[in-house]
Amino acid sequence: MKSFAPIALFAAGAFAAPNAAELSLRQLSNVNTIMETVLAGIQSLDQTCVAYSGGQGQELVQASDKMLTIIRTATDNAAAMQPLSMDEAIAFQPLSDKLNAAGDKLLDDITGKLSLYAQNCICESTLNWVSQISGNVNTLMTTISTKFPQGGKGGDEISHFGQVFTQMQESLQSCSGKACTPGSGPAGGFTPTEAAVPGAAAPTGSAHRNGTSSGREGNNGKPNNGKPNNGKPNNGKPNNGKGNNDKDGNKGKESSTEDSTSMKPVSVSTGGAAMMTFSGAGVAAALAVLLL
Image 1 (cartoon, rainbow, N blue to C red):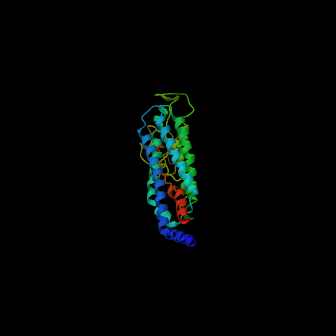
Image 2 (tube, rainbow, N blue to C red; image 1 turned 90 degrees about the horizontal axis):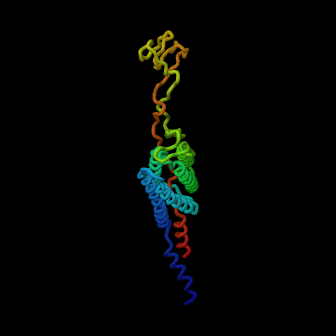
Image 3 (tube, rainbow, N blue to C red; image 1 turned 180 degrees about the horizontal axis):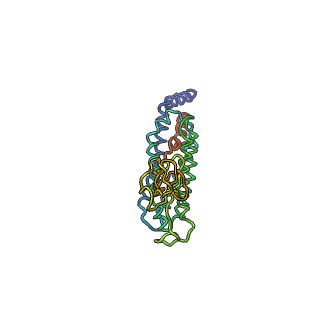
């Protein structure tokens, strides 16, 4: 009877071994669990940022510490997992979209609080945890991208997302390292900067120094429609033709007096690079079942 025991155990193991579809469902479930944890962490940090109304910002530091722990755990799990098939990657897309949207909102909300951070002298502490999250997010996204099939999104989105974090850090640096009085802000004041990000919408206009001339003589603010202006000022309006646009000899130049600060909001898309956070534990569990 003892000689039949290994055969019986093997048979039981064979019947217990899941098929490919069952393994896929288990892996998808584990991946979703990890991703939902990351999503919850982003949303929690974002809520803390939105709720901040002043003070030393200790609640921001605590929320960012929790987020860092979540990101690092997700990175470890992603590094341990096997490469994904295209079908698996597609199946994860809906939750990926939610993750990307939450990340975009977090960046917008942090940037929107820069003036308040400056007023309360927490630019440096905020810059510190933003920089840590930036570095860890980059590691997570890079790790995840190696698990996706070739031909999927990845490189451009990672680069763009990294540039957005860089922009945010530069904005925080502009109000850091200065003498600061809580309630008054940095010495000399602080004006949030709008740095251009690769892939972002171009500015809608720019100020032109040659379009600032004005005077009592000229076309009274009307375009010149191709006729020379005979050396008279054109009040900074376009001179759609040849001729002298002002007395200083700015010949035939067009100028735009649109507001140089009028920029379209940057929309950040992490795309497939931040598509998923995977659990290596799920793969290990599946293999353990097969070895039973």
